[in-house]
Image (cartoon, rainbow, N blue to C red; front, side, top):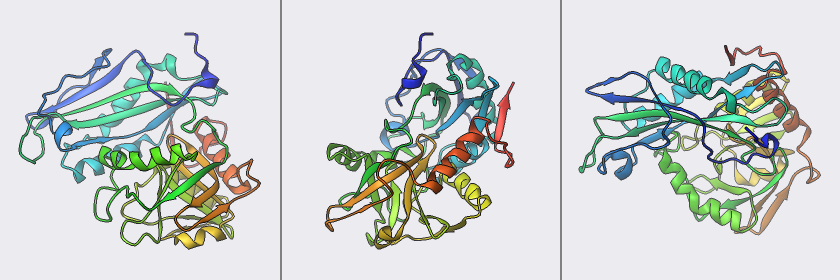
Length: 338
């Protein structure tokens, strides 16, 4: 392959194989291997009409030793099971999920980017209702599949500060809705506001809570965090997706000697933070340079505008160091594939 590994974007590309498993007659079948990028489903499938679908995102990393590493994919299995329960999909057993992840990475091992390129193999598990229903009720048949592709940074800037805008015109999820689940409807609801942010020159939109518009919620497709007074602060809200990256950063922060607070963050508190950022599997950490609140005619800037803050940088280097095998994994997060 003549791949420019260092200049990969974050997008779809063809690899050799994907894996699939069907749920029929009340049970999961055997894991299947396919080289087709297409699936055949009934036009009445519940995923098409009633949004019965859930997905995950994780990565495989090649270390300096040439070996391939997976990061906390047991947590992705648990999160997909929670999402499935929330919208009445058949839950994928954790053993099947992990077996499928390992198999698809091994089958596409040649697409895991070389160490030192800053790229990784993105892994996309997908669970959909394939059984046809016209009434609003759950399917009886489901498809679980995983496909992969090599990717670069989610934001083209990479680990460089970006500008974000607060949106009050759109809500990503309702307080008692599906915001805490990784389901497609949440992302469909965010597309208008994120597109508007891009048109205005921002990297993404920053959401406020849907009930009162007083507290920070999600940062586009990622979790928000802030640093102040030697403390790592991240929102506590039922409408926020529990990020595995954020969960990991909280543990790393504690081991670095920071306090960790998971609590409601009033929008008025933004001015008091020393550093802010967004975190998630796709972007890992995206430092925030400036938050603009056009409705209130306010903007808050962080740092020198060119580089991530010192704490954010230390957190980022610690996390990717573990993922690529450069830092000892004292947490038991890494699985090395043979």
